[in-house]
Length: 416
Ligand SMILES: [Zn+2]
Image (cartoon, rainbow, N blue to C red; front, top):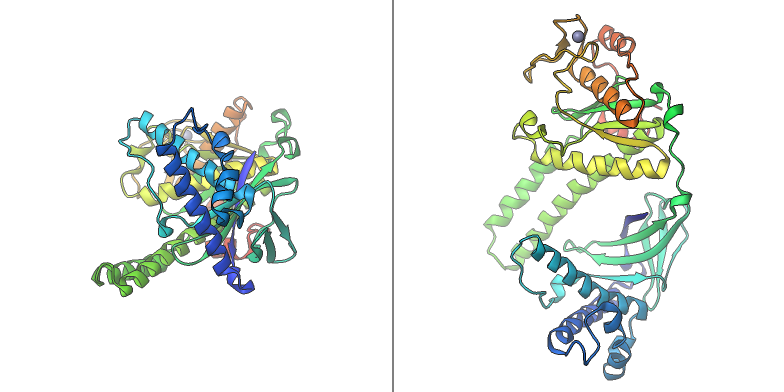
């Protein structure tokens, strides 16, 4: 399986920022030249038309323009490949009915990265929070190594990128052998106690069938600040220096929010897959979800989707089943007897008119997610007995096991 791991990079600390920029610009010229040749040369006669064929022309290029000898040769091949990859995603879009033009010439502002493939790089000194990436023909680049690469991961590619904010990042493309991944527990041996249903709340939190609730991140300060920066940008003269500086501030604000959300999702998903053998969540793409959730949900749904994706790949990495279940009616249905009751958003308690089962609204939904997940995994109609946990939730006021998001962020191990 393929994974991307991204880290902040600091080429300025070793004084090689200018050199890295120079390399990226040579790659940009190579990209543009690939495009030029693709558009002007004869496919059959000049033997182009695929990355593999086109790469054979690189020897000729290097003879004619020695500058192409100055960058790593495998990386140069990768740049030719990038053009052909862009070409094929363009034609994919065309097939899906999008109106597409042709691939454009890239200005320096539009071309900000290069990729080393298979050789010419080494990850060193990976102890603690920092590490060093060595790139052939460029040198050592310190990185903020805030999480380790998985064991048995093979680094296939390294992409060095300068963001519009001026910040640098490296992304490692990792191949993890499927056989190296831990096996997921056999469904027959799964203990219901080691499974969890997670309700993705409308009101900014998750609620688990074990009675844990975790607040979603409070990003209101970050959003306020971003809006201020955006307002300030709109008052600047388009194209002026001030405008350009302010645009960087806006980009920084957006990046800050994105990083916080990703960090939070990383820790929350880690906690779930490490604590449980099976994690069940609602399938947000299932039909019916839209009507159920109303309109004020776009940003949050995008975040949930990112969270579920992360949960799934961590499940593979740590040997945990992650299953998405049909979300229809998880809130209305009684987890005890199955009778459906309409419940407006402001009704916080589930109180079943049929069997008398009383529990927090979201707890009820999480039990339903749990039993649907078990069923989908093939545990048949394993009876979930919500009553024990429900009692605990009831007696101490329903939210006592609430865990603030900040704690997840700081420790990454809530519940520990
Ligand atoms: Zn009931």
